Length: 276
Image (cartoon, rainbow, N blue to C red; front, side, top):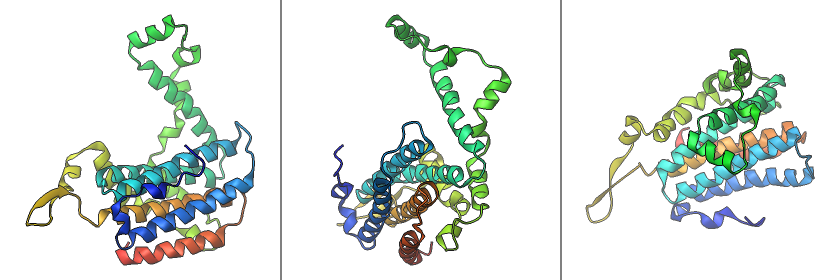
């Protein structure tokens, strides 16, 4: 991927609809503020907490870009699944960076070991055999049996469910005395995470969201209601504003309150059009 790649070149025809172009532009400006401060931050030490943070944000930005692309190409089901993911990313990120208890970071780090063990220990035996025969034997820390206490220690990160995590995050003191700092994430849990999880899980409710829609010449086509693409971009921009604000303010220790409060107020004006 080239450094100057502009994802806006890949947006679909729906970008020409009312509000959609403005929302995509707003979201791009949100990320540009983050990128500007990330460049000013300079080199980041490999293995540091900042290195972990910027890699987390890399996933977040890639997800956000994919949402804009899918939404403007009217790939609504895929967009819904990604918005669900984007919500979870924002909640978990915000819980970590705003939490005064550094043990939460350590739980997050330890869970990587638990996840690797779970994945590897469930690989088919014939696959493990091929790896071993090729000289790629699994390290002992992956295969060694653990006590219940050791497993519990590694898996602590998963013990707090997402809704509770969002509620606890919302109970932290605001970063600054502005409207953006006081925005909550838990109230979005049902509307975003729970509703769009139906698409990810392919349950019966997901199917019910697909409707016959009229097109030209009295024909119909199956699809989602036409309001969804811009609404999904609206949701995503809100999440992007929160996460970019928190990484620059909390992690980079830079006062970006005025910049992001201004962007947030622009977003709020759009949200008022949707009664969000």
